[in-house]
Amino acid sequence: MSSPHPRSSPSLLQRSLASVWHPCTQMKTHERLPLVPIVRGEGPWLIDDQGRRYLDGVSSWWVNLFGHCHPHINARIVEQLGRLEHVMLAGFTHEPVVQLSEKLTALTGHALGHAFYASDGASATEIALKMSVHFWRNSGQPQKTRFLCLEGSYHGETVGALAVTDIALFREAYAPLVRFADTVPSPDARHAMQGESARDVALRAAAALEQVLAERHHEMAAFIVEPLVQCATGMAMHDPEYLRRARALCDRYGVHLVADEIAVGCGRTGSFFACEQAGIWPDFLCLSKGISGGYLPLSLVLTSDAIYDAFYDDEVARGFLHSHSYTGNPLACTAALATLELFEQGDVVAANQSLAEKLLAAAQPIAAHPRVQHLRQRGMILAFDVMDAPPGFARNYFQSAMEQGLLLRPIGNTVYWMPPYVLDDAAVAHLAAATLAALDDTLRG
Ligand SMILES: *Cc1c(COP(=O)(O)O)cnc(C)c1O
Image (tube, rainbow, N blue to C red; front, side, top):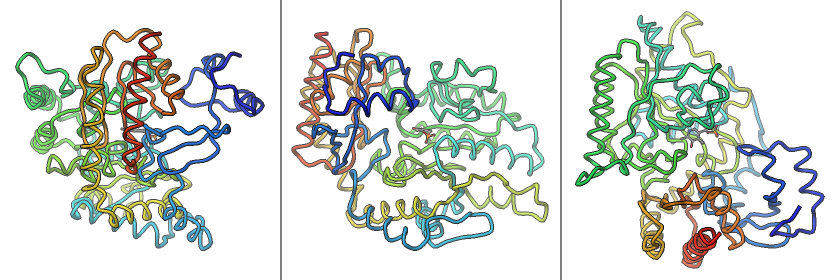
């Protein structure tokens, strides 16, 4: 096996390839592409077994907010570990889950006053979808069982979540298992025609949404949308006006609005919740990824009194009987509380605004590159598309960037930054320089 990263512990790599089935991976690609053994994390840096440092430009799959091994989050988890590691949440409760629910509810101005917990993002999606259908059934409208999603949407990969994930590569093989949702055009600002603004694209997409809702609302339970940035499809960004229109249309036609803030929540887009930038609240808001600071699996769905009340009854079957073994795990909730404490202590949303400006300034040489188009930004997400990207671009770019000491994983021909919120000036400079160097290296072939 030829490798640009000769390592002293080939046995670990071989053992991993022999025993670990890695996610989102055609395992055969590892005949050429070496796995990277990470032994330590330090702020925004990952350190391998050779002592090489990589800036974590994608927050380890969009989960890390305040860097790796953060002293405050570490200390809070250790403290909780000495008291209570876990207890089932059916029939029992504990301080961390109550505090976390209260804090999140307060962050929605009490518009979404009830938190239902799970462990991963796909489960949060499914919980929102199931709650919506069950709400309509409890409300005497059992025919409302269909869902709407945006073209190119991604809401997770379990069989239920695949119904609202419009990415062929992820769902084709499982099509016989899935009852696919209907799709409506994405408000992706890159769809702008000559002379159109991002807002014009949003209005056009909202008009298409209205047409579908007007015709099909009697069978539609919910419309699910990833607010402001459709991340997994390639950081497709849209104008907040789309969300205002979607909220109004869902109200008019009696269809729930689900906001999947699994990736865009927790300050990522410039406000704590992405929906705040549109001045709306959904009926269901899904959170995961960053909520635990990137430490432990945790997800949740926030919803309103109106939804909650439709399940509150003497009859058991009218209740929401969904559960996961680790629902509301105290260690994960404590990691989330420690993460929210860091938001409170540092006024992180304001601090990110100036960090986002630094990122945009540092990206100017990239924007000027002759093969780069659609350089775009929303808060702590910055992305650009590479024109005429050669075959294998994403994989080759990843490898080049790693050689530059930078972890980036392009989606197709879209290169993006989604770093932790703790970059100093030197890290920002490194991010920009290594991104450009890897681009030139990859395009040279
Ligand atoms: C990652 C992601 C999910 C799925 O979360 P998992 O924890 O990977 O199951 C769902 N929706 C969005 C928008 C995501 O980015």
